[in-house]
Length: 330
Image (cartoon, rainbow, N blue to C red; front, side, top):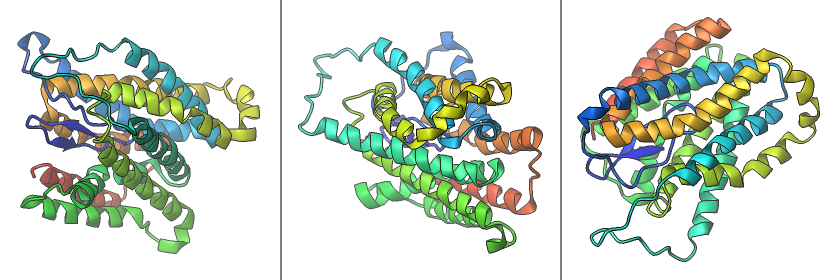
């Protein structure tokens, strides 16, 4: 759940539902009219993929042990990302832009990022989505830019100006409205799931901030592939005995279709699609399209799972999206 480099070197805070990509240190490329609508279509496609992912995951988790499901879908993700990263052409060095010497301890930073973004985050995300509605989860995960901005302010000294502070306040208020379900402690399971997802959003944001120390040396795609691969053993350890029952579960298309969708599309192909869109359309355009993600998720949860959209969800979602718009103006 990261940022893409903006036109002037500042990261565009974006917060999709699943595993948003780290910042692209190379920045956007000049507009190319020959590409037509392809960059925009790519960004819209990513918003649709990430918006649909959480309700689809809920369907898949209903038919398989959740930790086994997670291990298998992240294996599919790594199987997509590693070949793409391997084939990715490195940025050519020029006299004005020589290759950066890799500092001592770089791989330690990569490992820290992997543990946070592909280990701890995925564990919290799984516990969260297993214990709350897809509607609530989509709105809570939309708050990633809020936590990223706050952590960048606290840890890196990034400045927040003007409307950004009002945006932060609106997002926090909207998150509280969504995270605390009607009935309060009477819906303890859902409240716990919301809290897990809130922690997941914060943990992903921490990974986003820490990734800035790594991205000058690795492309976003390669960092994602390395991170996903390093943490696969951890995912299988968590799955443990749950892997023994995957055979019968995989015979049901209500399980294996969500598994393929979430692994191949949401945490696999969506990353290069996102990078392509950001590189050619620009980070502000990408951030604007990401506002579609909660709406798509709410509509999909209603259609696929029968989850009603409550007044509190509508109000909280409106505050979150409105706050993010203000936050991105900073």
